[in-house]
Amino acid sequence: MTALTRRPGVGHRIRQARLRTGLSQTELAGADISPSYVSLVEHGKRVPSEDVLRVLSHRLGVPVRDLLEEVEEPEPQTARPTLSLDVRRVDLVSRFVQARKQWENGDPEGALKHFTAVLENDSAAQHQDVLLESRLSVAEILRELGRTSESLESLESLLGNLDAAEKPELWQRVQITTADVLERTGRVGDALRHAHAAYLAAPSGRVSRLRALEAMVRCCYWTGNVSWVADLDPTEGGAQTAFSPLLGSVRLYQALVLREEGRYEEAIEVVAASVARLKPIEDPELWGRTTVLYANMTLLSRGDAAAARESLERARQMMWFVSMTEVPHWLIAADAVCAHTEGRTEAAVELARRVLRDRDDVRAHSLGASLLSAGLVLAESGLAAEARDCRVRAAGLFQQAQAYRYAALAWEQLSSPLGPANRTARPGGT
Image (cartoon, rainbow, N blue to C red; front, side):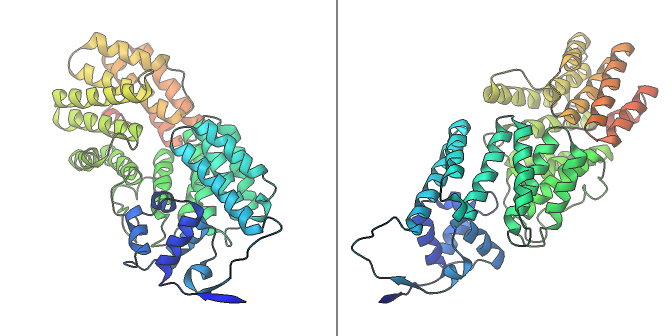
């Protein structure tokens, strides 16, 4: 005998499913839906689109039809002789959620062990949604721990097991993560292929559109496909409109393109708005790079060394607070340019030499950009041989990273080291 369970609406069913799996509204929202929107849906004040409903269904491990329709549930039984499939699923999802929380609380290595335990669970193969999400989480944690080759191996294996038509949202997220790992390990040409695939899979209004767009813009910038970037509206077509690190990253690369085009005041306006709205705690490196670019632009456009110095010191303090290690090369390069503008030639040269000595070339194209800035300082300080060393090494790093447009720029500076294009066309966050 069964009893028909009637529920007020889809929002109530989403809430009940979320509570059963132990997810918070923030965890259910993820990176591409706001927690406040989830709350409004659960309270019946918003009707989720089909795309959003599919995403929520996937994360809850509940078919879309169960969120839309009334369901028949068996009356409670006094005893069960064996552990049911539903109970095993709840246990598996609970372990998955615990692993996610451990990761979010700053223990990626502990979370990795728990995700691995989920994958090794006997019932994992019967719950493909939990299994696939766990595999993606493992790949993302490996990336965070700097184990990039293992991360890429996991992502490639996962892509081989995914059907884009059956699981489009997860397939798109795997493509974006793959592009991110490749770009951050200095393979921007390969990264662009995956970012482009994710971007094409993100039609207007799709919740992951901004994530795909950010990856696409970042890879297009470094590969030199920038003609469409500067005047792009990243909020067009239903993408996330609230300011976020993703939107801040798009704005950063737009400002870099505007700088290369000589549109300094427009670049300053874009960067100043981002600095005002970005929270350092959300993405310290993005905040630092944006602040450094603002300092650089105030020097280029307004010659205001005092304002530039103030911005650089804020960035230095934040990066030291976050990492407690060496100051990153892109901040040292910006400091060298500022010191040179201030007339502190000896300090500027020493800073430029520190960049030249840097061997942390995992993200080769980023170090290449810093080397071009250092080369400019050394050239204008009369140290032609060291400036040449910077530019030769930068060209090699750009070629290694498949950033051929900027490799060509480095070779051009070698033949005309103090040409007028040096300051306007310099790539990167400095």
